[in-house]
Image (tube, rainbow, N blue to C red):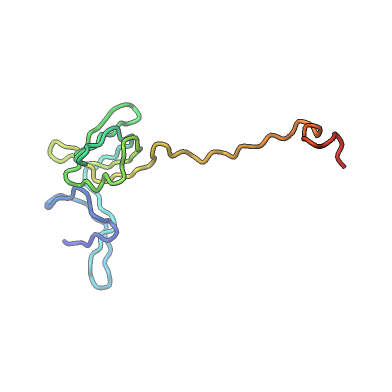
Length: 139
């Protein structure tokens, strides 16, 4: 069967002959449009990017428990667009041959991106006489 990618963009690491699971819809003209793409055996990991190859050929992700995995992009370097060391990512990957190949990658946090700080309250004067230019009583 042949599908149009629809909103999937360029599927990463997809090679001719590779098995995938496709959810699709059919247009009134009969065209099959893929809406989701899943890779049998896909594993999901979350962690912090600890290294990126300068040529985009691989990345290393460190999980919260300290373990690391190195993933080989297999030509799907577009997955790494906008990714930098220190980013927290959720990555879906499959084993192709002896390599772990990412098929999805989402940056979930970036270093330095912090929550908006709470407004700082300006302390009120401790007594009415503490306000310059005013006496004790107000009226």
